[in-house]
Image 1 (cartoon, helix red, strand yellow):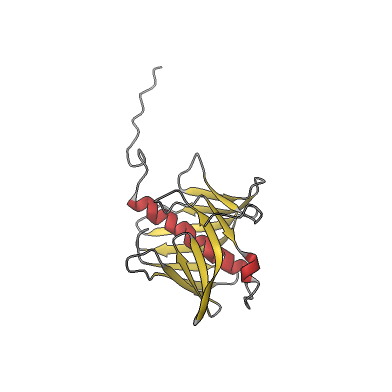
Image 2 (cartoon, rainbow, N blue to C red):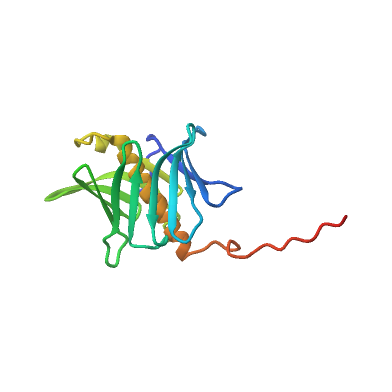
Length: 188
């Protein structure tokens, strides 16, 4: 499914100077969120409001490819468990305000058993990769459900997506990132 050019879109833009930082920027150039991967022995990302530099959420796991990640939202503090539920296909699940959600590759759905699932977010990925370049939250579908903290849900959906990016990077490292650069000594 392709993105609708008429809907609000956030482009995932890696920082050219810091590979641990990704900005979520709208088409007019406004940065709405910033993801910073925290180096260390365990996997952790922080998601910030770039204007106030307020920490909005963290995602933690033993490593980037773990099948269970803990998302912590701040102000108010809420913990969301993100779990890999696929067997042979890409499928991650979480619960928000008693609603079950599921990411399937490029799409996030709210589940309504026995009724059909409803699409609530959509990404654009290059062929064969889980490396989203853009994302849309489908407010017109979310408006159909009783969700009190819509901004919190948006942050959870985006944070989950950002963890998928890091997992993909762990499985498919970019060329040259694992190689140390050698600098020539400067002549005086």
